[in-house]
Length: 188
Image 1 (cartoon, helix red, strand yellow):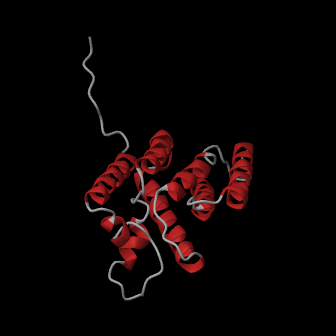
Image 2 (tube, one colour; image 1 turned 180 degrees about the horizontal axis):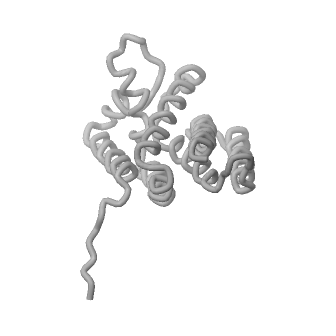
């Protein structure tokens, strides 16, 4: 019988998940202080020394176990395939770009704080639908996924509301779709 060993098969995905879990535990231990200071993005003075950290770090912060687990399950299911297809460096760039873009949108257009990896999750969803893209074509799976995705986010923002940031989902999804298009065009 062959002995099996556990491998760190998807370094960017696994590191992101472990960092998010660590940030969650730390936030629980500090009574929410670490999310407020480092891991949520909101309007603050430009001279605030933590503003840049929050601009990228907000994707690691989560407000509850359910919030964390919902995002991490999706990232763990989709992420390894994307990391294998596009490479670790490109996937890290997608994470950082999504964090930056959703953070800037939040600061410019919304007064409340934003935290969580939902923007990254939705970026990966649309990025994954671009994996069969070839120059001169648009995958039907991408169009259908984008239709359902945008439709659900628009309906949710109108009828559901609550603490869900539909803007982060839409901006993240658009970011992922654009990166997918760019990376596939570059590979062609």
